[in-house]
Length: 146
Image (tube, one colour):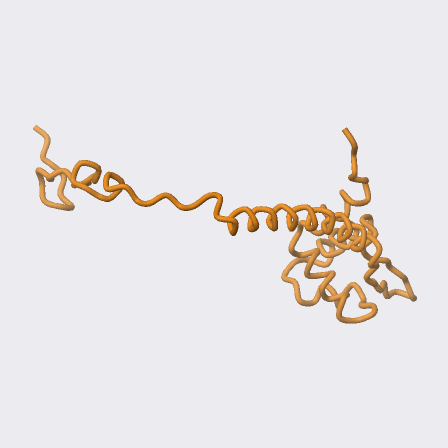
């Protein structure tokens, strides 16, 4: 069996699996670089939690960090995302070809729809009726026990 996956591709998809990390990447895509505190501001999670998410993104190679004094700035790195897109495009081509073949098959009319048979229509013999059983006591009351 041939393996097309690489550890870096696995890390990229694992990092993208979390909505918080995707939101962080979206913020970084709007501007060149942002500080960690700027990135954390819109989230209702703690700064250490944001730092853990940034660690995952950094390990996947999706961001780079630079420190200037006390400020840590993050910047989006596109290379791992390009690898993921290339992997996805391979499957996009495969499924597009398969769906094109299916459309051509259907358009040829080699599989015309079957006419509805009279027995498939609703009749009293194949309709199920669901009725509630009758209650012996009024609703909300429990029967008296002797």
